[in-house]
Length: 125
Image 1 (cartoon, rainbow, N blue to C red):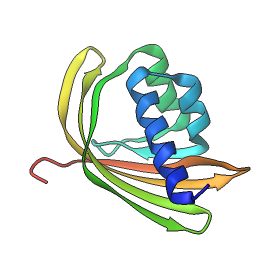
Image 2: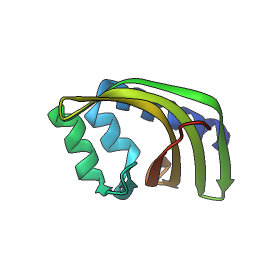
Image 3: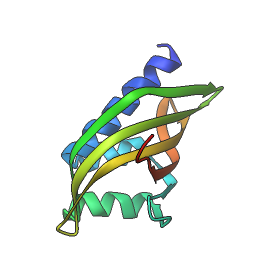
Image 4: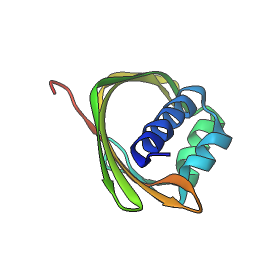
């Protein structure tokens, strides 16, 4: 399979897992030592991210891609930049807005996993 198609499919699976709170899928898609820098600048581990979904602390209700994602293949790695319209609740408090995500994917043992991710507000972009 073409690596670009594989990354597009992995991004789709990640989106679906985030929307449904599918912890087993997130566990498969996130690297063991992943670091996620969220929109407030906090750094979260894979375990932190999965725990928020598992506990219901984070519930994503909308995650719509805005524009065309940028996918740059780099051998056994890839960078994806995407802007989304995001809505849901965190600790019972609603949130919504446009956010820019950058994700660093790496393939190992035939599976693409997110090893690093960053999220920033993208209002007006």
